[in-house]
Length: 116
Image (cartoon, rainbow, N blue to C red; front, side, top):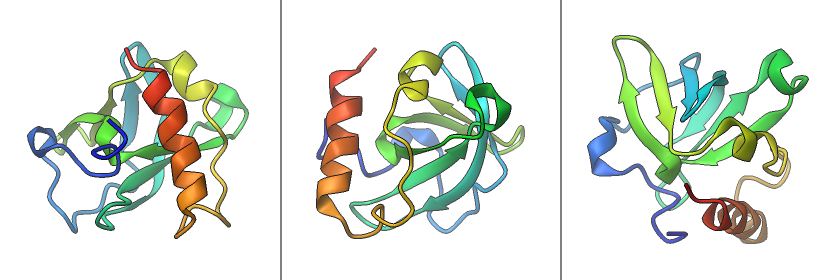
């Protein structure tokens, strides 16, 4: 899945260029936070989720391929992973996420090995 992990699936309802910042993020078993930032970069699309107090302010990078649906009316993004899987993900590294293939490989490896 790692090849498609960094792009939105056509069935999600995402329109490139539309802002997702502030949307609530829902794992398969409940809410995990809000979108802090996002990117539509080809081959590197992702959202950064601020988990708030749920896991003490941790930010996690979620590849766009994990997005199962986007509800623009409710401003919610649904992720194809559990809260526990997201909680245990590598923390977002703002200095490495852009243009660091090794960092993306680490994230892809984590989510690729923790599929539902």
